[in-house]
Amino acid sequence: MKKLSVYTILLAIILVAATGCGKPVQPKSGSTEANSVVQEQEITIAIFGGDWGETIKKHIIKPFENETGIRVKIIEGNSTATFSRLLQEKEAPTIDLALMDSGISELAHEKGIVENIDKSKLKENAALLPEAYQGNGEKVYGVALGYWGLGIVYNKDVIKNPPKSWKDLWKEEYKGKITVPTPATTGGLPLLVQVSELEREAKGKVEKGFRKMKELEVVAYFDGSGTATNLYQSGEASVGAHYGGPTYVMQDQGQPIEFVVPKEGVLGAGSFWHVVNGSKKSEQVYSFLNYATTKIAQEGIASDLYLAPVHKDVELDEKTLERMPYGKNGTLKDMNMPDYNLINQHRDEWTELWNREIGN
Image (cartoon, rainbow, N blue to C red; front, side):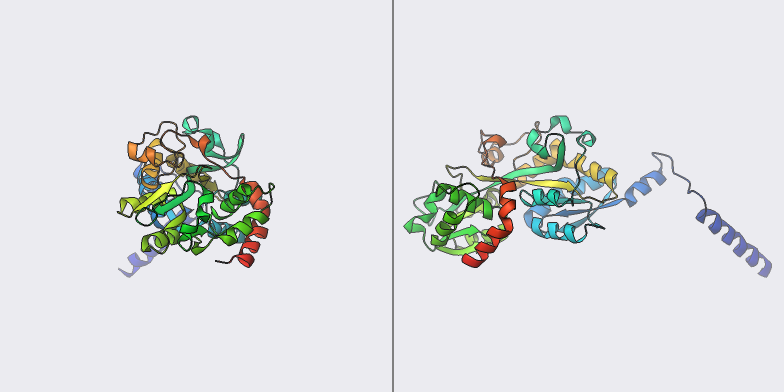
């Protein structure tokens, strides 16, 4: 028995050495071994939290995992937090794919932390609208999850004379009932620019807009969609700005909240998927983008978050169509899209001025 034990140990050592040296045996495509290799694959994706995060998991991430066997590690945070992390990890990123909004998306490309996207690798390319891509011509660096907009919101039980224009927020009867976004949100600086334009300010200047914003008697400012929703739900604010999707969620929950498309148009924005520069998971990332841009995924996002889809063949019910940021019969071309490149040129300056002159 003692001799047998020694031989057994020697054989085991030889086998371990043999498998540890040289090239591993590759499993045949379609075999159980091949499937297990695919299931071991993993990508890390930065998405938003809250209702958005749950909806993305439901309509994109979980079906993608089930279909491909590729596991998705999720990091939740807003665009600014994701951008900051990518900057810190520029030399050795831990994120493969990142979801970021207009404004921050352009900054990420400018800083070189996201790479150009190869449209030829997207199976749905021919079925996608031109607005599906962030960038110019063939050089694109973002693929749209969908588009949304900042508009006017009011509590119909409190506000009997609904606003129709951004200018209406300064009405005497609204004083002390208003909330608007800070520059920390995607809509904050675009709203400041919009107000400046209404004050006949020169392009790229916001001094008149700042003076006008300081005259606005707010109950509170909001620095995120969730904060705005809480202000309206609690009754602390009854009129002001908010995004379409969260407003309609409140309606569905029985809240007496109405969304108004200002006569100047909603301030549009998009949320875009970005391939992180330096990611070593290109194949898996493009596999994810292929699923995220399918008709079924786009329909799910549009129906639950009321984001305008970018797939030509998407079919939406009447309720969802009416809640699109451009209205039932509009298109993405009808949205008032701010000049985010111009805003980014002054982002730090205007944010600092806001914090100094207005605060939170």
